[in-house]
Image (cartoon, rainbow over all chains, first blue to last red):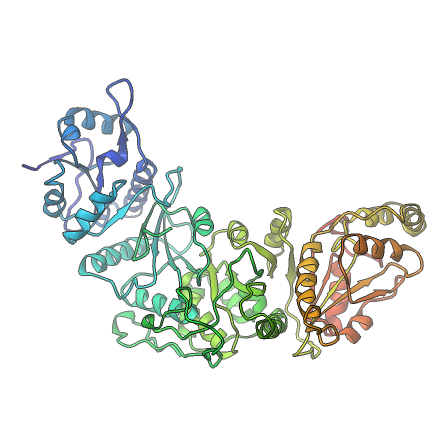
Length: 250
Length: 363
C-alpha cells in the first residue's frame, strides 16, 4: 500500500503544471552512524539546485506554476518504516520536498505513476531499470554525475540516438524543461541544459541539435565528441544528472 | 542546407547539406569505432584519440569572419544575436584569419594518412567556442560549405572554455579573446590571439608553413627582460656570457616539438625534400652573436627548425612577406601589427615582459 504524504512545511505545487521529479530517498539521505538525522547523500546538491531554481522562478513571477515539484520516494522496507526520521531530516536540512512516498521495493513504481513523476532519479541501477520499464523517464545518479555544490542546475542529454529514442515521457519532460529554461535569459540562468553526442560527426550533431530544437529544447552547451573519451569532458561539464541512450556507458 | 522555419513546431523534415569531403576511403576497414551507417552517418576516417593527435582548438571568431554578428551582439544584446544567427543559419560565414592555417593542417593530414593509414598521429581540430548551441547549425553549414574536416565541437554556452581545452588535450589554442588566451597560457596551454585583417597574401596550399619569434615565444622572456631593463649592449653582453647556457622554454616550444614529430614521419618515408610542413624562426637576434645561443638551445632540445632568419633588429614584415607562413607567432603587438600590414597572418602570444610595455621598439 503506497501512501503519499504532503510536506506541510513546503508550498504545494500544482502537479499538472509543475515538473514532478521523484528522487529515491537513499540518494538524498544516507545512513548516519549516530543521531536521528540522516547524512546528506549524492543527490543533496541536486536538491539544493532545484530549490534555487524554484526560488528564482517565483521571484520572477510569484504566480509561476511551472516549478520543480520534488517527491521523495522510499524504495525499501527499512526506510519505509522510518518515515518520521525521514520527515524530520528533510525539515532539518530545509529540503524543498513537496511530498513523501513511503513505499517499498515492489510498489515504489506505483507511487511514481500515481504522482505523475516525469523524472525519477536514483543511485541504484535496478531501481532505475524498474522505473524505466514502466515508462517513467529515469536517470542514475552517482555515475559520472557530480554532487559538489553548484549554483546552477546542470542537466546533460547524452547520446547518439537521443532524438530517435524519444518516448512520449521523454518528450513531455524535455518540453517542460525547455519551457522552464525559457523562463530565464540566455546568460546567467540557474538552469543549464547541455547536449553531447558521442560517436557521430558533425552532420549527426547538427541533426540532433535541429531535432531537439524542433521538440522545444534549446540547449546551452553542445559537445560533439566524435569518438573522443567523454570522461574528461564530463569532469568539466559536471552535470547533476544525465539522460539519453548512452547515459550508462563509461 | 538545413531548412528551418522560424517557428520550430512547423519543421517536418530537416536536411543538413552533406559535404563533398565525406568520401568512403577504401583503405579503411570496418571497425566498431568507424561511423555506423545505421545512424545515417557517412563513413569518414576515424577521428584520432586526443592524446595521440596534435589537437588544435580554434574559436569561431578566428576560423570565420563574424564581425557583423559581433556588432549585433554589441548593439542589441545576446538574445537578438542568437535570433540573428538562427535567422541566417543557411548563410555560411566567410573565412577568418585562422582559416588558411586550418586548411593547411588538413593537407598535412591527407599526406600523413597516405603514408600511415593506421596512425593517429595527426592534426585534430576542435571548434571551441563561447557560443550557445543555437549557433551550432550555422557553424556546421559553414564548415560544410568550405569543405573543412572539422568533426569535433565544444560549444560552452558562455562558460569558460579553459577546462575544456585541457580535457581535449589541446596542443594549441587560437582565439580572438586575448583574456582567454592569457588564461590558457597560464594553464600551460600554447595559445595565441588572432586578429581579422583585410589584407592577406596568398599562402601555399600544399605545405603548412609556421613561423615563430624566438624570445618569449619559443624561448622564455629572460633575455628580453635584460634588454628592456638595461638596453641593447647589456643584452649582447649577457647573451655572450651565457652562450653555452640553454635558454628556458617558452609557451610555443611544445607546439614546435609537435610539428617536428610529424615532420620526422615524412623524413622516415624519404620525403624530407617534399615535406608538407616547414618551420621558420624569425628573430631580431643576430646570426653572429646573440643568435648562437638560440640555435644551441634548439639543438639541445632536439628540435629542428627548417629556416632560421636572424634579422639583427631589422623589421620583420618584409621577411615574413617573403616566407608567407600560414601563421606567425610573436609576443609583441608591434610585430604582429607590422606583419599584418604586409598581409601576413600573425598571432599574438601575450606572454612575458613585453606585455607590460605598449609597443616594443625592435627587440
